[in-house]
Each structure stands twice: as structure tokens, then as C-alpha cells.
Length: 537
Image (cartoon, rainbow, N blue to C red; front, side):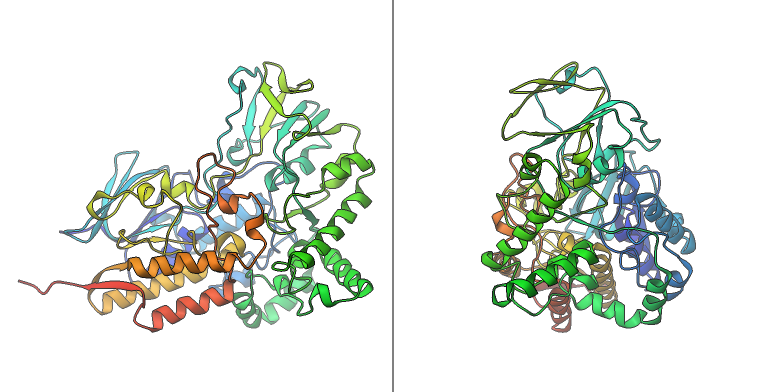
């Protein structure tokens, strides 16, 4: 049976864009289906106030082209969503990517034809194409967690979700606004709008640890030094734990360090900003006693910033370790609670009862507002995949295969679904890492695989059930050495009712994971079954 393309790519965010570019480079034909009107993925959809990256700009960028790095100049230390989207549009223009991308084309289904070793991919628009390989580049944070609050349909004013913010923007000046949720998108939104609105009510169920970004204009000297040592910097990124240089841990152990020296190291990392504090000591992500020390330091910082001791207490996490949930990076979040027009409502003290026509009612009182913002996150890592009708061998659905939680081999493939690939899928470092570094590693590994299969006349690849089970056990084993399992986070799907509680990303680190993937490839793609083409009749 003839096919239309070598590869169908689902999604035109960073992963889909680079996958397309790399496939062209190795001489394979590809088509990208994208639900949005243009490129950008996460940075196309997420336009809420204050949205910006939490990794320094020069590190959160493609490394595959030295010329691209030379010509693009970032304006801020931590780039905002509009600037990142401009960058991705520049990449699309520079490498002429749009000619192989079909926009406004949401994929409805992807079914495997085992007899012909082909994937049939259908869009909601009625397009139907066949390809040898199907690559999902749908992103880990692309499907919003839908609000499901009692009475929400009764509210007379506008409601907004941070994951689906209107592209034309929203003017909240002088309005009374409720924000439900205090995760990363909420923290960024609150910081942006608190000075604009008449009254801001922040409804918090679980406080998050947040650290200062110390954002500002990009330092020309940082850029100069980065480019002068570009090759070394990029290599170092790929061998770190998180894929960014400030994640390199101090080799000292917190529990073996004196109080004064330990405090000095915390202060230095806090002053550096961003994720630097995650690497303050080598033992803080695994040893509960060491973790308690950095959590105590963060709590002291909150109390220093927030003038009302009662509010500071409510903003301080106590039910999970430091870093067990995604650490938030802010540009003045806690300072907002010193404003007279900002009020924190702790839903543990007064649970949210219902949304009313006029606002939000807790067990204690009703808060009248003009607009409600739902900042309640995403169906992370699996949501975009399970919302498509994906069927593998014998019509088995991906939803059924993942009924007890996602199972993959290397986060790249699923047993029973030949020639289907999941860039930064569950079981890979993905959301625990600099996503660009992880995306590039997956794309390059896949491109090498496709060339290997073409050159050796292989038509099908699939992980063995044994290799997949081994990998799932390994992912769980590694996470058990960390503090991650001690929080009800979206890493475990805890924010989605009914979703299996499984720790989804690989916590072994970007460098170790890269070495494992390289070893698998070097050993004739160990753990995979490869099927050769049938000889001509």
C-alpha cells in the first residue's frame, strides 16, 4: 500500500518544528498537523498575563544552529511569552517550516494498519493521510484542566482559563477579579494584574513554593560569554540533571554543613534567582532532613516579604517537601499580598462552596466579582494523547493501555503501538527538565532511528513488553529515591479527578537519560523489536 509521507507529526510547537526540520535534513518526507492558527505550541496557546519562561532565555532556545543563536538577541533574562512566540515565528520563517505544516487541523484519530505497517491519521476537518511513522509532538502542558465548580454556569460575568487566554487580551483595569488556584500560571498572572485591578481575591487550596527570578533586561556580557563558550555550554546542558546550567548541584550535603555556611549558600542561590536553589546541596531532593532545611529557609523568606504574619503563614507550604511540586519562579509574587487591594482566601479554612451569579461563595461568605480566572493547570503529559482516538495493534486503544497509568519504553514508544513515537512522553525527563534540551535529544534520536530503519530496510519498530515493564519499574524506582512522591502534584496526575496516580516523568536526570538512550541505540536498539521489509514477490 502506498503512503503519503514518511512521517506524520502532530503538533507545531518546539518539538514538531524541530522534528520537521530534522526530517528534511535526513531526506524524509513529513507533514505536520497543528490545531492552532500558527506555530508555537505552548507559547501560542498560553497568553495569560505575565506568562514567561522559568529558565534563562539563552538556555531555553534551540542549539541546532549556531547561526540562529548568533542572530537572535533576547531582550530579557527570562523571556516573556510574546518574545518566545516571536522567536518561534522567526525560526519558522528562517527554516521555511510552514510549507509543510497544515494549520487549523486538529487530529481526531490515528489508527495503525498492521497489515501494511502504516498509520492512518484523520483530522476533524476530514483530512486523511497515511504515513510510515507517526510522531506525537503534542506537548506535556497543552490540555487545560477543565473547571468543574458547582454553579459556575450561573456566573453573570466573564470567566477565563489561563490555558486558553483570549488572544486579543483582556482589560481588567478597575475590576474586581477572583483568581482560583495558586500554581505557576496563577502566580505569574497575579503578579501582572494586581496593580491594575480594583480588588483581587486569590482563592488558594495548596500554597506553592516560589522563588525570585530577579528578571530584568538581558545582560550583553552574559550573551557574549555564552556565545564565546557556546559548544561547551551546550554540552554541559546535556549532561546536567535538569538540562540547564544553574541546576548543577553543589556536591556538599546540607546535613553535613554548618549552619552559617549553609545559610550563606542558600542566600547566594536565592540571590542568583530561578532554579539555582534546587542545586544548593546534593542531598536536598532525596534526604527529608536536608529538604526540611531548605524548606525552612524558603519559609523565612516568605515571612520576610509578607508583612501580615497570618497571611505569610497561609502562603507557606507545609504538606509537601520543597521541590516536590514544580518550583515556581516569580517576579514579585509574595509582595502582592502587601497590597491593600489583594486578599488571600484559604480554602482549607473556608472551602469553596459554589460559584454564584455575582461571584464566588465559600462556607463563610460571598465575594462579589466582575470576572473569574481559573488558574487550575493542565491534564499534564498524557492529556493530549488520550484525547485523541489512538489505536494500535488489533484496535487496542491507548486509553485502555494506559488505564492504570502511562506505560512507555524510554518515554518514546508504547508496546502494541508500532511506529508511534511520543516526544518528551511520560517516562522521559520532560517536565523535570529544560524542555528544549529534552526535545532536541528525542528528535535527534528519532531521526537517527529513521535513517537506520531506512538504510537497513526495516519497516516496523515496537518496544517489547518486557522492556517496557522494566522501564516503568526503573522510572518508579528512581522516583522513590526522591521527594517527588510526597506531594499530590500534577507530576502524578493528582490534579485530574479519576486519573491514575503514577509518577510520570523520569527523575534520573537529563544526562543519565541521554546516556541510556545512546546505549540502547548502540546495542542494535536493545528492547525494541524491528521488522524487516518483506522481499518482493
